[in-house]
Length: 390
Image 1 (cartoon, rainbow, N blue to C red):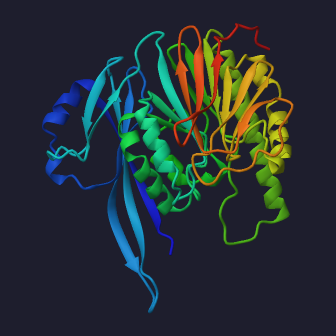
Image 2 (cartoon, rainbow, N blue to C red; image 1 turned 135 degrees about the vertical axis):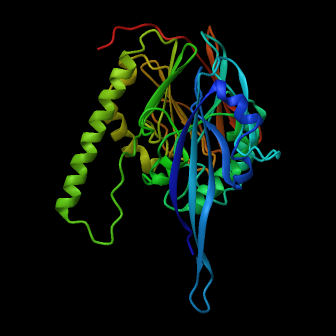
Image 3 (cartoon, rainbow, N blue to C red; image 1 turned 45 degrees about the vertical axis):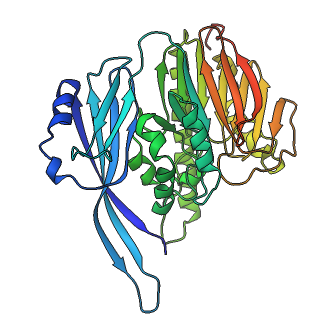
């Protein structure tokens, strides 16, 4: 039977000047509860970082005669904002203070100014029993990235807490020290668990931030999901939802254009979202064309460096108008065919992959890496040529 859960989120702000004292002798150490999920670091900047973890506040088990017992778990989700941190500095944090290592980890704030850095990309990690997810995460950790991006479909069913528990179990060591940025996929189903577990910039649906000379943007291509209800939706209900969905998309697109226009001097612009604008999976070519039509020429108009997507469960790189479009891998499930190459296609493979991007002053290097560690594709991205925005 499926487990369900409820959350209560606690937010705390902690200045760096108080951090040392809290680590030495937290007053609440003797009252701390066991950590159920985490701890993990989120949304690290030059001066801020958020530490998250979840504790169990209560459980109910129930069963009818002769049936398997089910458990309903109530979680408290804790989100602590650390302020006034120093740039380019490694900090140790501790959410327990009980002398054990269970609540301890480190993170490093972003340096000031332009600097080289590495981020990794994976996606479609959705299968709870997916055998490829853990090996991919282990290879990512071995590569020592500064940040990680997931292009969506983190779990199979965003409303199933078992999926989220599996996700955080696999990513526990990675997320303790490295900030993990996620995009909404269709399998998240607009679940509140996504927003409870993650502490992302902006409205958490679509957001952006800078690191060094790069500007990084995460978008929400699935959009709001239909509300769950025990009653059938009427045609009028569906029409109203479609109108709200279209309004949401228009608002997001205006935000996206304004955001890009506000960073004309960024040396690189990287964009992440779930549905790809180009597909080599025959059953999804038409859907990708619709995505492309919705975005129009915005990527070319603002000289975006590269767009990373997921959804198709294969690897595909397309080039159009000076922009690289990359399906960022199938880090979960089984690879799907590449049976419909497009005129824009440069490279494609039916393989489990993740992506490594090394951002440098003169160029950025993108490597697509398979489960066995072999490089499937490699290409360079030059700094942007400043263009007049529309």
